[in-house]
Amino acid sequence: MALMTVDQVAEFLGVQTIRVERLARENLLVPADKDANGKPMFSEEDVKRYKTLAERLGGL
Image 1 (cartoon, rainbow, N blue to C red):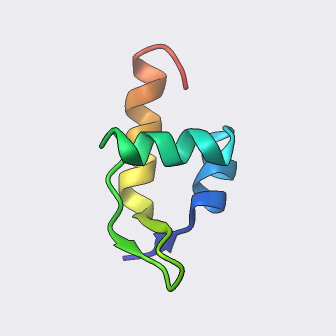
Image 2: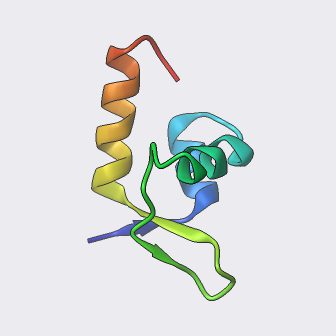
Image 3: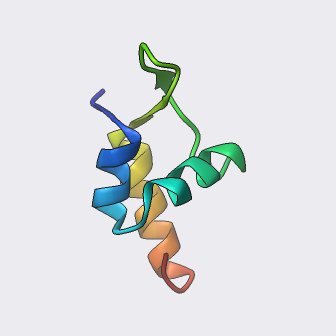
């Protein structure tokens, strides 16, 4: 399982990092782990599924 940082997720989704952090806080994108600094790390598969769902619902 590949893990992505907040910055990588933001780039992949085409949004700002603050938006990714908000998605994590609201449990819309659940972190798989945390890095050494306590920042969330996300499963690449979960991020891809979230992007697909968001696009179906009308965009990010």
